[in-house]
Length: 240
Image (cartoon, rainbow, N blue to C red; front, side, top):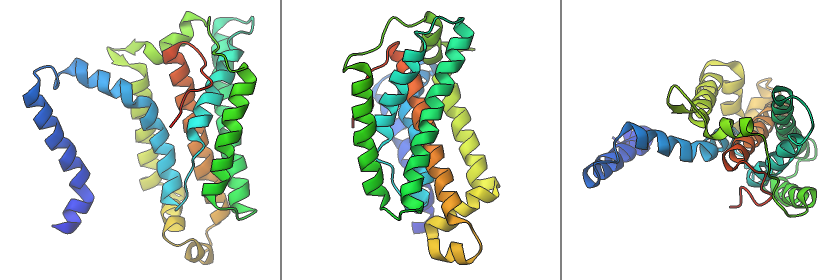
């Protein structure tokens, strides 16, 4: 029983919560409300996937909130370029993702090469990225964005919110990576015992670099989606 609860306890608690709220309100367990809930949690849920990779290696990344803001303001500023909408949207998306990858790369460099504690590294990056976002925007939001950009965060495909579809895709990809690939097994191995994993022939530095880059990219993706939902780049996004 204890092992069963350890494995399925959270899921059972969630089902009980759904049953209780379904009895309290006739509007709770409806398709529209479920889709609305998934839309509301999609931003945080995508960040949680990246954080899961990092936590599995016994690390932490405190900079994701600030990275949400930085990727949001930089990607929305790209939308101000006088280019065709498809090109501008693609460029904005790629810019945000590149920022996330760079952030993850910087964090992994200090963690793996200089042996600085992840808590200290990402705490410093949190301050740096938040300050950069404020300096970049002069503390003011970026607005007046193309309508097409707003569709990414507020549009629907077959009645399902686009952020929800992206969230499901991210979770599906993360499940496959962690459970069906060599890299995923390495992530668990490094988190279980880093030194034992190294002695077993695993390039632990490369694994750690990979998880921090994944976390940074997913945080940046969340920042782009949040900016699209708000239809503006907010330097104070992602606080707490």
